[in-house]
Image (cartoon, rainbow, N blue to C red; front, side):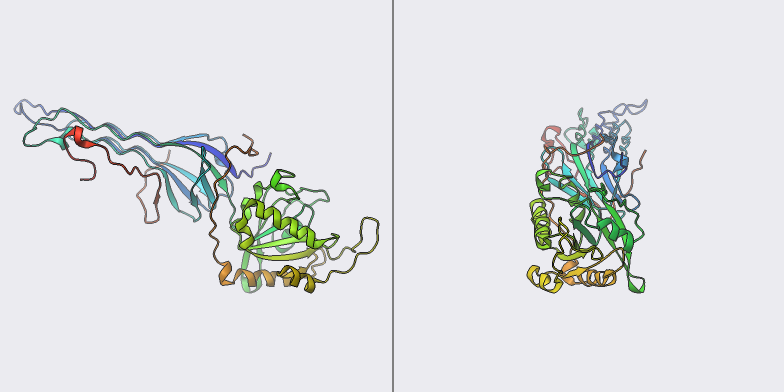
Amino acid sequence: MTNFIDYVKIYCRSGKGGAGCMHLHRAKYLPKGGPDGGDGGKGGSIILHGNRNLWTLLHLKYQKHIMATDGGKGGQSRSFGKDGEDKIIEVPCGTVVYDGETGEYICEVKEHDERVVLLKGGRGGLGNWHFRTATNQAPRYAQPGEPAQERTVIMQLKVLADVGLVGFPNAGKSTLLSVVSAAKPEIADYPFTTLTPQLGIVSYRDGRSFCMADIPGIIEGASEGKGLGLRFLRHIERNAVLLFMVPATSEDIRKEYTILLHELEQYNPELLTKARILAISKTDIPRVDDEGHPLPEIDCQRLSKELDIPVLPISSVSGEGIDALKDALWVELNKEQNQVIEISHAPIDVTAIEPSDDGPQQSDEEEHTIYLNEVEEEWDLDKYKGIGWDE
Protein backbone atom coordinates (compact mmCIF):
# COMPACT_ATOMS: atom_id res chain seq x y z
CA MET A 1 0.00 0.00 0.00
CA THR A 2 1.39 3.39 -0.96
CA ASN A 3 1.24 6.47 1.23
CA PHE A 4 0.98 8.77 -1.78
CA ILE A 5 -2.70 9.70 -2.07
CA ASP A 6 -3.56 12.31 -4.70
CA TYR A 7 -7.34 11.80 -4.95
CA VAL A 8 -10.01 11.95 -2.26
CA LYS A 9 -13.77 12.44 -2.29
CA ILE A 10 -15.27 14.14 0.76
CA TYR A 11 -18.69 15.28 1.90
CA CYS A 12 -18.53 18.76 3.45
CA ARG A 13 -21.17 20.72 5.34
CA SER A 14 -20.94 24.14 6.92
CA GLY A 15 -22.78 25.10 10.12
CA LYS A 16 -26.23 26.61 10.07
CA GLY A 17 -26.90 29.96 11.70
CA GLY A 18 -28.51 30.09 15.12
CA ALA A 19 -32.07 31.35 15.45
CA GLY A 20 -32.77 34.77 16.91
CA CYS A 21 -34.54 34.95 20.26
CA MET A 22 -38.08 36.21 20.79
CA HIS A 23 -38.22 37.51 24.35
CA LEU A 24 -39.96 40.35 26.19
CA HIS A 25 -38.16 41.81 29.18
CA ARG A 26 -39.90 41.41 32.51
CA ALA A 27 -38.74 42.82 35.86
CA LYS A 28 -40.37 43.54 39.20
CA TYR A 29 -40.37 47.29 38.67
CA LEU A 30 -40.40 47.23 34.86
CA PRO A 31 -43.60 45.49 33.73
CA LYS A 32 -43.31 46.77 30.13
CA GLY A 33 -39.59 46.36 29.41
CA GLY A 34 -40.07 45.67 25.74
CA PRO A 35 -38.27 43.23 23.42
CA ASP A 36 -34.74 42.13 24.31
CA GLY A 37 -34.21 38.97 22.24
CA GLY A 38 -30.60 38.49 21.10
CA ASP A 39 -29.22 37.42 17.73
CA GLY A 40 -28.24 33.90 16.79
CA GLY A 41 -24.60 32.96 16.23
CA LYS A 42 -22.94 32.47 12.84
CA GLY A 43 -22.45 28.92 11.64
CA GLY A 44 -18.93 27.60 11.12
CA SER A 45 -17.36 27.62 7.64
CA ILE A 46 -15.38 24.97 5.77
CA ILE A 47 -11.97 26.50 5.00
CA LEU A 48 -9.09 25.11 2.93
CA HIS A 49 -5.64 26.07 4.18
CA GLY A 50 -2.47 25.59 2.11
CA ASN A 51 0.35 23.83 3.95
CA ARG A 52 3.76 23.44 2.30
CA ASN A 53 4.71 20.76 4.84
CA LEU A 54 2.18 18.35 3.30
CA TRP A 55 2.86 16.51 0.05
CA THR A 56 -0.07 14.11 -0.10
CA LEU A 57 -3.78 13.85 0.77
CA LEU A 58 -3.18 10.81 2.97
CA HIS A 59 -4.53 12.54 6.09
CA LEU A 60 -7.91 12.94 4.35
CA LYS A 61 -8.09 9.40 3.01
CA TYR A 62 -10.45 8.05 5.67
CA GLN A 63 -12.03 11.39 6.64
CA LYS A 64 -15.10 11.09 4.42
CA HIS A 65 -17.30 13.59 6.27
CA ILE A 66 -16.15 17.04 7.37
CA MET A 67 -18.73 19.23 9.10
CA ALA A 68 -18.50 22.56 10.89
CA THR A 69 -20.56 23.28 14.01
CA ASP A 70 -23.83 25.22 14.06
CA GLY A 71 -24.31 28.66 15.56
CA GLY A 72 -26.01 28.94 18.94
CA LYS A 73 -29.45 30.43 19.53
CA GLY A 74 -29.85 33.97 20.82
CA GLY A 75 -30.98 34.57 24.39
CA GLN A 76 -32.77 37.09 26.50
CA SER A 77 -31.25 40.40 27.58
CA ARG A 78 -29.89 40.71 24.02
CA SER A 79 -27.54 37.79 24.55
CA PHE A 80 -25.88 36.70 21.32
CA GLY A 81 -25.65 33.06 20.41
CA LYS A 82 -22.23 31.42 20.20
CA ASP A 83 -20.62 31.35 16.76
CA GLY A 84 -19.96 27.90 15.32
CA GLU A 85 -16.32 26.83 14.96
CA ASP A 86 -14.81 26.83 11.49
CA LYS A 87 -13.48 23.55 10.16
CA ILE A 88 -10.05 24.10 8.63
CA ILE A 89 -8.84 21.47 6.16
CA GLU A 90 -5.06 21.41 5.72
CA VAL A 91 -4.13 20.59 2.12
CA PRO A 92 -0.79 20.54 0.26
CA CYS A 93 -0.03 23.34 -2.16
CA GLY A 94 -1.32 22.43 -5.62
CA THR A 95 -4.62 20.94 -4.46
CA VAL A 96 -7.47 21.39 -6.94
CA VAL A 97 -11.10 21.03 -5.83
CA TYR A 98 -13.95 19.86 -8.08
CA ASP A 99 -17.66 19.39 -7.49
CA GLY A 100 -18.28 15.74 -6.62
CA GLU A 101 -21.60 15.61 -8.48
CA THR A 102 -20.90 17.52 -11.70
CA GLY A 103 -17.08 17.46 -11.89
CA GLU A 104 -16.91 21.24 -12.35
CA TYR A 105 -13.81 23.10 -11.19
CA ILE A 106 -14.34 24.99 -7.90
CA CYS A 107 -11.04 26.36 -6.64
CA GLU A 108 -7.34 25.70 -6.16
CA VAL A 109 -4.90 26.22 -3.29
CA LYS A 110 -1.46 27.14 -4.66
CA GLU A 111 0.34 29.13 -1.96
CA HIS A 112 1.45 28.38 1.58
CA ASP A 113 -0.98 29.82 4.17
CA GLU A 114 -3.54 30.59 1.43
CA ARG A 115 -7.10 30.30 2.73
CA VAL A 116 -10.14 29.50 0.61
CA VAL A 117 -13.60 29.48 2.18
CA LEU A 118 -15.12 26.48 0.45
CA LEU A 119 -18.52 26.60 2.18
CA LYS A 120 -19.57 29.66 4.17
CA GLY A 121 -21.48 29.16 7.40
CA GLY A 122 -25.05 30.40 7.68
CA ARG A 123 -25.69 33.81 9.17
CA GLY A 124 -27.44 33.98 12.52
CA GLY A 125 -31.03 35.18 12.77
CA LEU A 126 -31.95 38.52 14.32
CA GLY A 127 -33.70 38.70 17.67
CA ASN A 128 -36.99 40.52 18.12
CA TRP A 129 -35.11 43.51 19.55
CA HIS A 130 -34.23 44.50 15.97
CA PHE A 131 -37.87 44.61 14.89
CA ARG A 132 -39.19 47.11 17.44
CA THR A 133 -40.83 50.21 15.98
CA ALA A 134 -42.88 53.08 17.29
CA THR A 135 -46.07 51.36 16.19
CA ASN A 136 -44.97 47.82 17.07
CA GLN A 137 -43.24 48.10 20.43
CA ALA A 138 -43.56 44.43 21.38
CA PRO A 139 -42.83 42.28 18.29
CA ARG A 140 -43.45 38.62 19.02
CA TYR A 141 -41.32 37.16 16.27
CA ALA A 142 -37.63 36.67 15.55
CA GLN A 143 -35.62 35.63 12.56
CA PRO A 144 -34.45 32.06 11.95
CA GLY A 145 -30.81 31.39 11.06
CA GLU A 146 -29.59 30.67 7.56
CA PRO A 147 -29.43 27.00 6.63
CA ALA A 148 -26.14 25.15 6.25
CA GLN A 149 -24.48 24.57 2.88
CA GLU A 150 -23.44 21.07 1.90
CA ARG A 151 -21.43 19.71 -0.97
CA THR A 152 -19.53 16.63 -2.04
CA VAL A 153 -16.12 17.62 -3.37
CA ILE A 154 -13.28 15.83 -5.10
CA MET A 155 -9.76 16.93 -4.21
CA GLN A 156 -6.90 16.21 -6.57
CA LEU A 157 -3.27 16.96 -5.88
CA LYS A 158 -1.20 18.34 -8.76
CA VAL A 159 2.38 18.57 -7.56
CA LEU A 160 4.25 21.81 -8.14
CA ALA A 161 7.52 21.38 -10.05
CA ASP A 162 9.52 23.25 -12.68
CA VAL A 163 10.40 20.32 -14.95
CA GLY A 164 8.29 17.25 -15.65
CA LEU A 165 9.68 13.98 -17.03
CA VAL A 166 7.61 12.28 -19.71
CA GLY A 167 8.46 8.95 -21.28
CA PHE A 168 7.67 5.30 -21.75
CA PRO A 169 8.40 2.82 -18.96
CA ASN A 170 12.11 2.04 -18.60
CA ALA A 171 13.15 5.15 -20.51
CA GLY A 172 15.59 6.10 -17.75
CA LYS A 173 13.52 8.80 -16.03
CA SER A 174 14.03 7.54 -12.49
CA THR A 175 17.74 6.97 -13.11
CA LEU A 176 18.14 10.53 -14.33
CA LEU A 177 16.29 11.91 -11.31
CA SER A 178 18.49 9.91 -8.94
CA VAL A 179 21.64 11.25 -10.65
CA VAL A 180 20.76 14.96 -10.80
CA SER A 181 19.07 15.14 -7.36
CA ALA A 182 19.05 13.48 -3.96
CA ALA A 183 15.80 11.65 -4.70
CA LYS A 184 15.88 7.87 -4.37
CA PRO A 185 13.20 6.48 -6.68
CA GLU A 186 12.92 2.75 -7.27
CA ILE A 187 15.02 1.61 -10.23
CA ALA A 188 14.71 -1.83 -11.79
CA ASP A 189 14.85 -3.54 -15.18
CA TYR A 190 11.10 -4.13 -15.49
CA PRO A 191 8.33 -1.74 -16.62
CA PHE A 192 6.35 0.47 -14.26
CA THR A 193 8.87 0.50 -11.43
CA THR A 194 7.65 4.03 -10.67
CA LEU A 195 4.09 3.80 -9.38
CA THR A 196 3.80 7.24 -7.76
CA PRO A 197 5.19 10.67 -8.71
CA GLN A 198 8.65 11.47 -7.38
CA LEU A 199 10.10 14.93 -6.76
CA GLY A 200 13.76 15.95 -6.68
CA ILE A 201 15.62 19.24 -6.29
CA VAL A 202 18.26 19.59 -9.01
CA SER A 203 21.35 21.58 -8.01
CA TYR A 204 22.64 24.07 -10.56
CA ARG A 205 25.53 26.50 -10.71
CA ASP A 206 26.10 29.22 -8.08
CA GLY A 207 23.78 27.61 -5.57
CA ARG A 208 20.74 27.79 -7.83
CA SER A 209 18.30 24.92 -8.17
CA PHE A 210 15.01 23.82 -9.69
CA CYS A 211 12.44 21.11 -8.99
CA MET A 212 11.99 18.05 -11.22
CA ALA A 213 9.03 15.66 -11.16
CA ASP A 214 9.07 12.07 -12.36
CA ILE A 215 5.71 10.47 -13.11
CA PRO A 216 4.95 6.81 -13.90
CA GLY A 217 5.59 5.90 -17.52
CA ILE A 218 2.81 6.16 -20.07
CA ILE A 219 2.31 3.87 -23.04
CA GLU A 220 0.43 4.06 -26.32
CA GLY A 221 -3.27 3.86 -25.55
CA ALA A 222 -2.90 5.28 -22.05
CA SER A 223 -5.76 7.69 -22.79
CA GLU A 224 -7.94 4.58 -23.22
CA GLY A 225 -6.88 3.20 -19.84
CA LYS A 226 -3.95 1.01 -20.88
CA GLY A 227 -1.06 0.64 -18.48
CA LEU A 228 -1.49 3.07 -15.59
CA GLY A 229 -3.65 5.34 -17.74
CA LEU A 230 -3.32 9.10 -17.65
CA ARG A 231 -4.23 9.73 -14.01
CA PHE A 232 -0.67 10.83 -13.15
CA LEU A 233 -0.45 13.38 -15.96
CA ARG A 234 -2.17 15.86 -13.67
CA HIS A 235 1.15 16.19 -11.88
CA ILE A 236 2.88 17.81 -14.87
CA GLU A 237 0.13 20.31 -15.68
CA ARG A 238 1.91 23.01 -13.69
CA ASN A 239 5.41 22.31 -14.98
CA ALA A 240 7.07 25.10 -16.94
CA VAL A 241 9.11 22.67 -19.08
CA LEU A 242 8.39 19.10 -20.18
CA LEU A 243 11.43 16.87 -20.61
CA PHE A 244 10.64 13.99 -22.97
CA MET A 245 12.91 10.96 -22.63
CA VAL A 246 13.34 8.34 -25.33
CA PRO A 247 16.10 5.71 -25.02
CA ALA A 248 18.79 5.57 -27.70
CA THR A 249 18.03 1.86 -28.09
CA SER A 250 14.67 2.71 -29.66
CA GLU A 251 14.40 1.87 -33.35
CA ASP A 252 12.23 4.92 -34.13
CA ILE A 253 12.80 7.84 -31.76
CA ARG A 254 10.57 10.19 -33.73
CA LYS A 255 7.64 7.75 -33.55
CA GLU A 256 7.93 7.28 -29.79
CA TYR A 257 8.07 11.03 -29.25
CA THR A 258 4.96 11.48 -31.42
CA ILE A 259 3.09 8.84 -29.43
CA LEU A 260 3.93 10.55 -26.15
CA LEU A 261 2.85 13.89 -27.54
CA HIS A 262 -0.45 12.39 -28.71
CA GLU A 263 -1.22 10.93 -25.27
CA LEU A 264 -0.60 14.32 -23.67
CA GLU A 265 -2.93 15.94 -26.16
CA GLN A 266 -5.65 13.42 -25.36
CA TYR A 267 -5.37 14.31 -21.68
CA ASN A 268 -5.15 18.11 -21.95
CA PRO A 269 -4.36 19.99 -25.20
CA GLU A 270 -2.91 22.88 -23.16
CA LEU A 271 0.09 20.70 -22.32
CA LEU A 272 1.27 21.07 -25.93
CA THR A 273 1.81 24.79 -25.38
CA LYS A 274 4.54 24.17 -22.81
CA ALA A 275 8.25 24.29 -23.59
CA ARG A 276 9.60 20.86 -24.56
CA ILE A 277 13.06 19.27 -24.62
CA LEU A 278 13.84 15.80 -25.93
CA ALA A 279 16.58 13.84 -24.17
CA ILE A 280 17.97 10.73 -25.88
CA SER A 281 18.84 8.56 -22.88
CA LYS A 282 21.04 5.47 -22.52
CA THR A 283 23.58 6.61 -25.13
CA ASP A 284 26.17 4.36 -23.46
CA ILE A 285 24.30 1.28 -24.77
CA PRO A 286 25.04 0.16 -28.37
CA ARG A 287 22.17 0.73 -30.79
CA VAL A 288 21.03 -2.64 -32.15
CA ASP A 289 17.68 -4.00 -33.28
CA ASP A 290 15.90 -7.07 -31.93
CA GLU A 291 18.02 -9.34 -34.13
CA GLY A 292 21.30 -7.77 -33.04
CA HIS A 293 21.95 -5.76 -36.20
CA PRO A 294 23.50 -2.30 -35.67
CA LEU A 295 21.19 0.70 -36.04
CA PRO A 296 22.27 3.98 -37.63
CA GLU A 297 23.70 6.69 -35.39
CA ILE A 298 21.35 9.35 -34.10
CA ASP A 299 21.71 12.75 -35.75
CA CYS A 300 20.50 15.01 -32.90
CA GLN A 301 20.87 18.23 -34.90
CA ARG A 302 18.76 16.95 -37.76
CA LEU A 303 16.18 15.51 -35.35
CA SER A 304 16.05 18.84 -33.51
CA LYS A 305 15.27 20.71 -36.74
CA GLU A 306 12.57 18.21 -37.72
CA LEU A 307 10.84 18.29 -34.34
CA ASP A 308 11.56 22.00 -33.71
CA ILE A 309 12.71 21.35 -30.13
CA PRO A 310 16.14 20.92 -28.49
CA VAL A 311 17.41 17.34 -28.69
CA LEU A 312 20.23 16.28 -26.35
CA PRO A 313 21.96 12.90 -25.96
CA ILE A 314 22.57 11.90 -22.33
CA SER A 315 23.76 8.96 -20.28
CA SER A 316 22.84 8.87 -16.60
CA VAL A 317 25.38 6.09 -16.00
CA SER A 318 28.45 7.75 -17.55
CA GLY A 319 27.30 11.33 -16.95
CA GLU A 320 27.52 12.24 -20.62
CA GLY A 321 25.41 15.28 -21.52
CA ILE A 322 24.01 15.80 -17.99
CA ASP A 323 25.55 19.27 -17.56
CA ALA A 324 24.39 20.30 -21.04
CA LEU A 325 20.89 19.09 -20.20
CA LYS A 326 20.86 21.17 -17.00
CA ASP A 327 21.96 24.22 -18.98
CA ALA A 328 19.20 23.72 -21.55
CA LEU A 329 16.57 23.26 -18.84
CA TRP A 330 17.76 26.36 -16.98
CA VAL A 331 17.59 28.45 -20.15
CA GLU A 332 14.03 27.32 -20.85
CA LEU A 333 12.94 27.87 -17.25
CA ASN A 334 14.13 31.47 -17.31
CA LYS A 335 12.42 32.44 -20.54
CA GLU A 336 9.64 34.93 -19.97
CA GLN A 337 7.05 32.95 -21.91
CA ASN A 338 7.67 29.94 -19.66
CA GLN A 339 7.14 31.78 -16.39
CA VAL A 340 3.36 31.56 -16.46
CA ILE A 341 2.18 28.33 -14.89
CA GLU A 342 -1.54 29.12 -14.94
CA ILE A 343 -3.63 26.48 -16.61
CA SER A 344 -7.38 26.17 -17.00
CA HIS A 345 -8.71 23.14 -15.17
CA ALA A 346 -11.23 21.32 -17.32
CA PRO A 347 -14.18 19.58 -15.60
CA ILE A 348 -13.43 16.00 -14.63
CA ASP A 349 -15.47 12.91 -15.38
CA VAL A 350 -16.90 11.93 -11.99
CA THR A 351 -18.15 8.64 -13.42
CA ALA A 352 -14.61 7.47 -14.11
CA ILE A 353 -13.29 4.97 -11.61
CA GLU A 354 -10.33 6.38 -9.72
CA PRO A 355 -7.88 3.96 -8.09
CA SER A 356 -8.21 4.30 -4.33
CA ASP A 357 -7.65 2.43 -1.09
CA ASP A 358 -10.75 3.41 -0.07
CA GLY A 359 -10.85 20.91 17.16
CA PRO A 360 -9.99 23.86 15.01
CA GLN A 361 -10.21 27.45 16.12
CA GLN A 362 -12.00 30.33 14.49
CA SER A 363 -9.56 32.77 12.88
CA ASP A 364 -9.87 36.29 11.50
CA GLU A 365 -10.37 36.81 7.79
CA GLU A 366 -7.16 37.79 6.02
CA GLU A 367 -6.55 39.85 2.91
CA HIS A 368 -6.05 36.84 0.64
CA THR A 369 -9.13 34.95 1.85
CA ILE A 370 -11.37 33.95 -1.06
CA TYR A 371 -15.09 33.38 -0.54
CA LEU A 372 -16.98 30.81 -2.59
CA ASN A 373 -20.64 29.89 -2.73
CA GLU A 374 -21.77 33.20 -1.26
CA VAL A 375 -25.53 33.36 -0.76
CA GLU A 376 -26.41 36.09 -3.21
CA GLU A 377 -30.12 36.36 -2.70
CA GLU A 378 -31.26 38.14 0.46
CA TRP A 379 -33.93 36.76 2.74
CA ASP A 380 -37.41 38.16 2.36
CA LEU A 381 -37.68 40.17 5.56
CA ASP A 382 -41.10 41.59 4.81
CA LYS A 383 -42.70 38.90 6.90
CA TYR A 384 -40.54 39.98 9.81
CA LYS A 385 -41.59 43.61 9.39
CA GLY A 386 -38.09 44.82 10.17
CA ILE A 387 -34.57 45.22 8.98
CA GLY A 388 -32.12 42.70 7.61
CA TRP A 389 -28.62 41.60 8.51
CA ASP A 390 -26.90 44.12 6.29
CA GLU A 391 -28.34 47.24 7.95
